[in-house]
Image 1 (cartoon, rainbow, N blue to C red):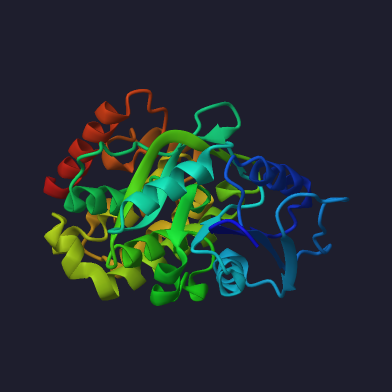
Image 2 (image 1 turned 135 degrees about the vertical axis):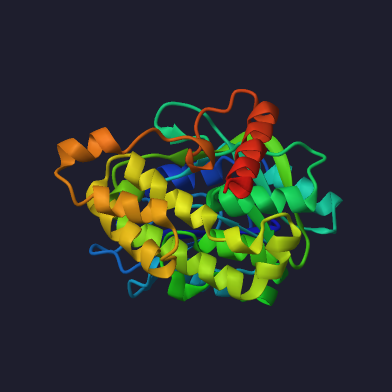
Length: 332
């Protein structure tokens, strides 16, 4: 086999998207070493495209254990110097792997490299992305509040993944990537290819499908991070008393988006852990009202609770995000 990069694709019931993802890998200007598709217990087994002529392709089927376990299974089978993850419903532009391999080969202090995501209808742009001179503390602070790049945009040194143990299987699907990124930062830094080379698809089967389960997975991931990295986050400028504000803002976002059924359960769960947070208690009480009244009392969404949007000027958007985080951390 030739090539430096092994590609791992976790796949659950995504046969309809998979062929496009594989075609985008085949179209890379720098050929990948191998492609490992992990069929995570799909109701109908995943199969390779007919007459596949791309890089070596292996499809392995496992019981359904969610994406973290599927990625780890693929990692154990990978043989490349680098590992790239791509979800079956996402796409790469042709220069992605070439640009990332070049970036990691040029910087031996970096353990991973991410690209920007395209901004176009049907795809999510992520961001805002940091400037080239971003400090480690600033990078970590924003990452904790806003995981601004998805697994499909990342290339990682395989040895670094093995040294950290990969994704935490028990976290399910939600923020298992954030937990891994922060552990990887113990070994080295992340570098950015400042080009939109990943197309992260938006469709109905994603976050809105089971928002309660995914936010609770986010909570588990943050708890796992804090068990190990609380002091590091504090040194990055997040007061210890406000380390949970990032998770709090995710719940506020569900509330302000009018998903009151999920918000009700999430707010009560949060208040149980933080009984002195009067505002979240009031939000939880409001969700008990009929929905027509909830809409009147819910107020306006502002500050660091706002999710990623359009980022035409990433430098300005990055500064705005930092300012919003600062306001969130200094508010009484």
